[in-house]
Figure 1 (cartoon, rainbow, N blue to C red):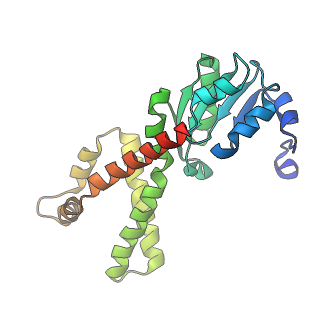
Figure 2 (cartoon, helix red, strand yellow):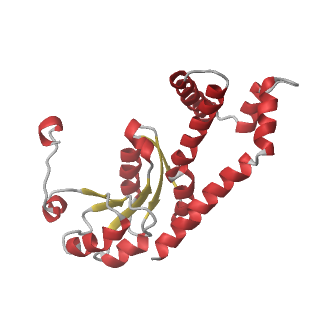
Figure 3 (cartoon, helix red, strand yellow):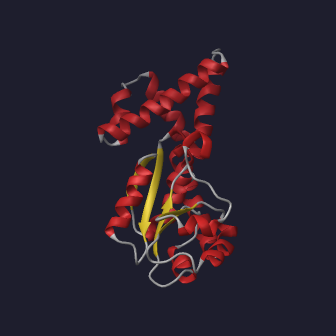
Length: 225
């Protein structure tokens, strides 16, 4: 990182904290407690702390760090690796409007960022945090269907991934309800309505709703530990 990007690096967390204005805590929830304890006296109210640790409530940071510490909680997702993340952002009790502006600017650089109350962060985890893992099997299954119809695997995966990407871009950029977009493709007695009927028979809508709910519930459980 230092040689390729000019980023200063250190193996000493205390040094990093002292020399930084904004701290992004990107650690596993199970190691967060020891990290906060070791840095408690280094993190002052002059620092902005942004955490992306899954399922850890703002109260954990505000109870472990010095009074007045400014904390922002963020739930990004894996699509940040291709600058298409969907991130939910919640302010702590000491976070200022400027802190939120900074956090939104940082995470908007790798996708879309939305400010939400912390009460909805478990829902964010279930929806956009876990969501990419729900979509990857969809892409694979769509490609499998085309392979079953005789298409080669590479072409099938390319077309399936692009189909999902294109549909997502239409939903994101047009502002139209997904139902309206679906109806634009669905002709009376046509091919698409047959496919839609098969999806409805299989309970696909309920399956996706339940996936988000289950993941959200698990996030709540982790937050209590």
